[in-house]
Image (cartoon, rainbow, N blue to C red; front, side, top):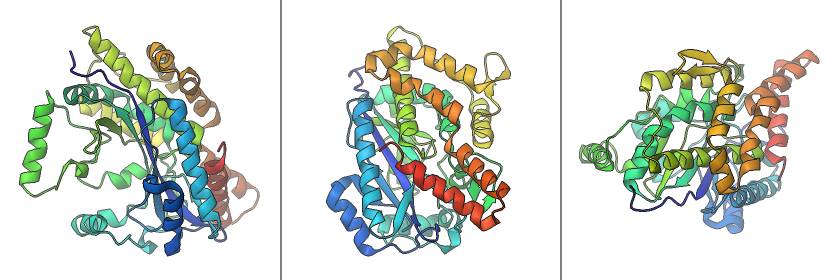
Length: 378
């Protein structure tokens, strides 16, 4: 059925925004020494991002969910300690509540300068952060097969990760506004469906030969075969403000992948649905998070999210047990009871406003909530 049994290793990449601890605004021009100090502590596990007010970390290749949590917590804690010495704090939020994109400076790096030159205004607005989760699937044909099937679950993962309700000081009415910004770029959104890995490679080769992209790293789908690693990389999620939420979603994702592989071994498979239907759930997750449910395609009706989540957890129970992450997967229910980062940001804004705060003070209160939640549980 497959040449290689999947390893189901895990790697998590997180992007953070850097805020001034006094003003709570984004740090437009952080000290040059900051990244060097982070690199001294973390080596190649930390890097720059498109904007100087961003920083990215990535775990090592982790054999299980517990190892991923330990490494991710270490990375967050190290970034917090280094930035604190400069009067700066990281926030694991996919947008900043009030800082404006036009005020940010781009990182001087060939890749970023090329991106900005090509994408123009669409790239200049990318003051957004995400969480990317790699699952080790060391068989190319299997990666394509699982990508086709796993696309169904992408809106569910997004709904549980939302952390971008504000943009330029305004409540957007969306729980994940980040994707409205990112979707302005080409080669984003739901992944295409392919019959084989060879077909996928042919399509990528056409774009490379045409000079549109240098390689497949410029394909930014919500889920893609990684160009650098033998993994499937899920990119749809907002960055989770609380580390425990990030770990819970990484655990849920790897269990979904294992469940799909297990079905394949039994000559079964998850039904693939048209992009039109999955895209509708994607929009609902962006707009409402889990508040208004998603469409159950088999029933042809909107179903409360907690029911859909229970079904997923039941389907993957055997896989969570096999991977030793039952507790982490079960904790996704805590997100429903506590709310996503987007819910907590909106609540902080509401409470501050009700207490008589000005518009600016209420937005600062949101940043304070993000700073505290980013450091919680480390």
